[in-house]
Length: 126
Image 1 (cartoon, rainbow, N blue to C red):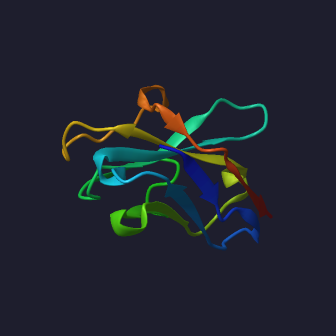
Image 2: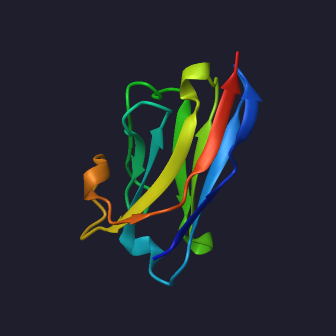
């Protein structure tokens, strides 16, 4: 599967952005999907994950309550709605996918994902 992330940009603190991750292929509903981010000089941080059908989600403590991950398998797309953005959310955001053997599989480790998109820059000004 090939992934294309989009939707990044420059936003003021407190604002919102919605990132999209569009996937190629016919079996997108077989993939668990997640979002990671990497700020300059920092390690990559895994922030959100969703199961194949979207029935379960995971958020890191740093984004819980502000970010929402969702998916539309008919459109082969996963979204990351980001609200109440803070300057510390500034990073390149990457979407990732990997085949999941069941809909109960929720993957919240970057190392477990096989396929990665190219990243989209999010900059939050104070």
